[in-house]
Length: 355
Ligand code: PMP
Image 1 (cartoon, helix red, strand yellow):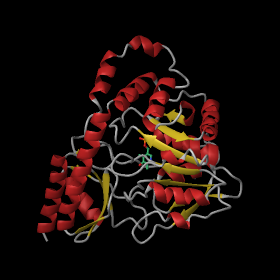
Image 2 (spheres, helix red, strand yellow):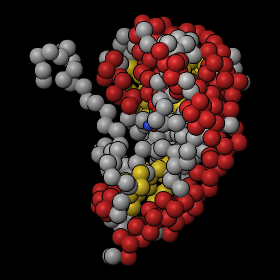
Image 3 (cartoon, protein in one colour):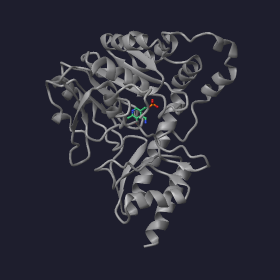
């Protein structure tokens, strides 16, 4: 505790991201895309004039928002962009979930950043237990008296996604507060809730370029919702006096959105690798939850999860183990290339055969 800190800072529990290794390892711990971004992104970066960097970027990010609006079939004023969806989520939590005496409802196991934002902004939390299939139980969210609802779809770290029809049914019961659906892992087989915003002005869908568009290093995230919600986010952004997305990231993001063929091929390759990996893991006596994301949530049966993660690490492969109570038997494994997943399953087979 430093005497220079504001009161309250010492009590914060910072988010601990997955390890970024210094030496070359097979990195299956932070759900990045194993494939490079669309070739147009590289072209944009090579042709980008440094002259442009002496100017501030467009404070309204009009070009990127227009491109997102075209991609999602909405209007520009229904789109907000920020430096990664983490920043967009931070703005949304401040803009919509701070209601005195009311708690934000989130699933018990979901993106671990949500409780961090809540602690930071003093938002009370109510955690709703997952069902016995490890799914977000949409019918268990309270109908009234809460500050809002937030969950990831597909959920992290479990990978299960609800259909658009399920989310529509939830929204029919939720008219008072904002329902935030975090679609960071959209693109790998799930349905987007974006078409529901037309009828539900309280629905905010967030997304990112970090996963399906292979641009985690660029930091581009976005939110799509009614004009009312987007205006709420803009008020927060303006008071931070920050610019939504820098000029280089904006140009790269547009190039990534333009190449739908690359996007679809990349997502299909990841889904095919995922399904092949599921089968091999099951053959190795590992429980695997069904996933519509670019990762698998698995429970080894022959060894405990910590020793499996340690064995993989020693074999040059990083996966994610969460120390969280209730999740300690499980590992989250990002989907890499076919060769990376073969290295993973080979290493697991070595441990299994050493019994
Ligand atoms: N939402 C979820 C569910 C995530 O897992 C992540 C990344 N780990 C994010 C949002 C944030 O992604 P980014 O800031 O890279 O857009």
